[in-house]
Length: 393
Image 1 (spheres, rainbow, N blue to C red):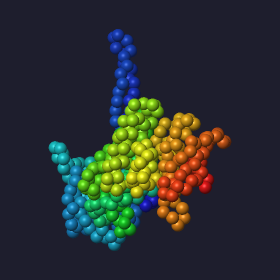
Image 2: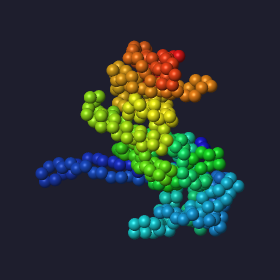
Image 3: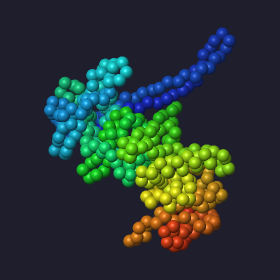
Image 4: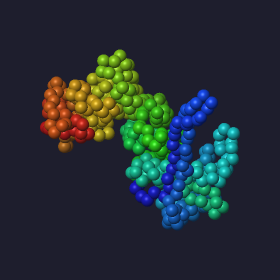
């Protein structure tokens, strides 16, 4: 999916500045807040690119002969066939679908279509394949349009598919700061991979006074979108990975003996139980924080992205990485999954009080782990603040 980026999404920045005025009583200071917007852009020579010329022909044909798929706030969509497979042609609408149905000017139409292409192309350029390949074109009469990748509608997902999709979407938000918004239209490619068919109102990272805001789970709407998607697949809403990330984020702001740690643990237990009830796996960081028996009850236990102990530590305050007591506590409560060559993965639990040492300014925590499957005991080492976990068998 990595390729030359022919479109960039629009941006906005929040700025506040102090304004000094001279009044009869003397200097007077006020704070002025404003949003600065940068419209989406195209790469120089965009319309001369071979893929854009080809997409323009597809768009003209799709508008004339394609099967209507309906319309949204920004455009009318048509399904058409190309030599590369099915594609959607989205032609700019002349007026908004919601509210007072205000008419879209030509500049509005261009911004709406170009932003969607920019979202898809920027994220694809960063290596994310959960977005559709999308090309911005302008038809013979000047109407802006898009040609974007299409696939089979994934009405229902298996538990493993749901977990894989939520993992990819959460990683996208955490790693890039982009916001996933709008209902999730899940489509399936011929190779079986899933992607979101419409990313038209996804937003770039928020910038305030020149600084990009850090990702925060509580500011994300992804949990609601995934819970709604789960209801369509499993008949009930469940706590999604963003919800679990939110709980772990809350934990990072609490002292170890805080009453609210117990509250968060109870909420995590509910989240794990909801996921378990429909067969959706939970990351080990959630299982370890929830309760001991969660691992035994959940046959689909899986690792969080990256090493579970480092991922859990990253969810907590960074100072914990240099706090021996906290590092030891993290290791004591950790579950891991180990896969031996030719054998099924087994779940292990730390069984001895960890010892610790410092080597080359790094904290090393050493302990023993015991298989919950056959009782085998191994040695394990955790290195902080490195993100990797080294196992000494």
